[in-house]
Image (cartoon, rainbow, N blue to C red; front, side):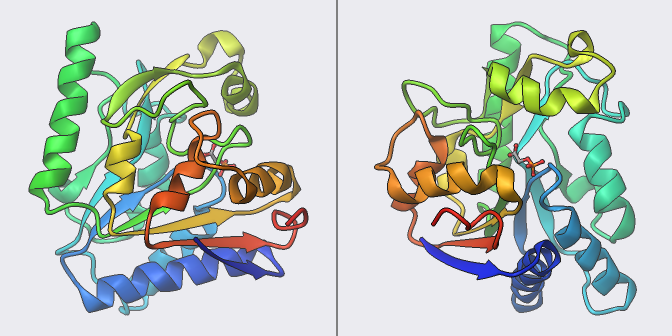
Length: 246
Ligand code: PGA
């Protein structure tokens, strides 16, 4: 795991955008793995700017997002479908048929339905040729995607019960805790680890403790991000606040 520290949050976004843009310039058919949350927004803004300026062309690229809440309609302002449209897909020319976000609202919402949804998602990633470059951020509890701290790592795309820590940290986006979904469909640890390259963006003082734990802990499902020590090509881009305990 290599890491680089930048003095400001915006520079983390610029550096990440540069890596994603370089990948697309080298390989126009790139399969991207994208993430939601506040940390990736500066990177998405820069990619949209470069598209508008004619530097980047996404027409042959494909993308797979990490996760989606279960039970929110795709047009709900807090759904990750909506987030991605607002922050990236609405501003670039990736064809709609190339864009994949897990379906948090399938017709069959029982165990078999969620399992089928997860299986279809992993199959679609494989059929696209696998993810070339995966963007990640980290939750304050060490989650990647919505792979929450657990006794074991779960390999494939699956439905997960959100921990109270995640609910507490994301409830601010909803009117009340009752309105926030308590489960999500997330790429599994195997789905993430199969990406050829991983870029992780981490900013802000509230991530300093978990960054320290991720860097200094053995691989351990109680801190899901520690699995990244086993990946051969991970670059972590941090601002000084997030790196302050290293
Ligand atoms: P954040 O979310 O970028 O909004 O901090 C990260 C995460 O929960 O994975």
